[in-house]
Length: 173
Image 1 (cartoon, one colour):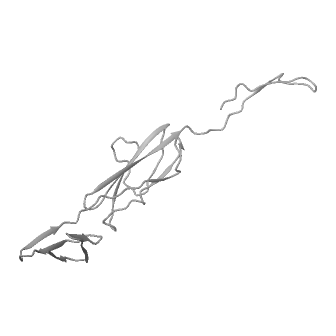
Image 2 (cartoon, rainbow, N blue to C red):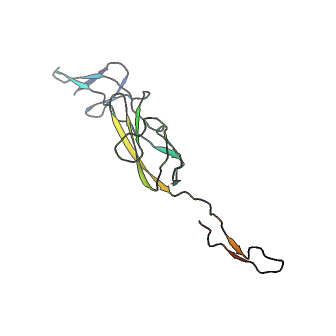
Image 3 (spheres, rainbow, N blue to C red):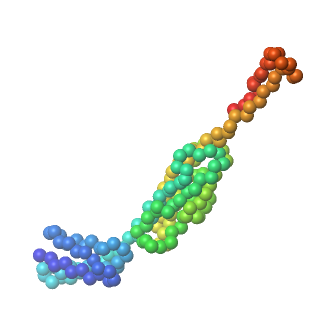
């Protein structure tokens, strides 16, 4: 029969025993040491290291659907979570998926100058260097412009009761 003794340094810890000895640390950073005394009074010390999980980036944007050429899009990484909260995070936005950082703001704006489907990449790094990234697609379409009406008529100076011919073939859109 083994006896499990847990002596965490700092915060409390949770221990459970179900036939084998298990150590489950509480949430957050907690250096700890576990000492197990075996039946013949042998002492085994096991060290635990708190593992820094990478941030979980979340991209949101307004508007959420397809956008027109040169339409400003408001992006945000505010929904990002990290196991080391609260701490500052480093945001790196790549709006055209070319590998270059286009913005390091939490909530940048961007407008695309031509039609297409673009991959937006957000990489978030915490103070310990752990990084996570995510992507989303943005569909950019040509702007919906109003039609331009243009017409000619003949004769140039019609009289009352005279038939007038209209031609709108010069209209566009």
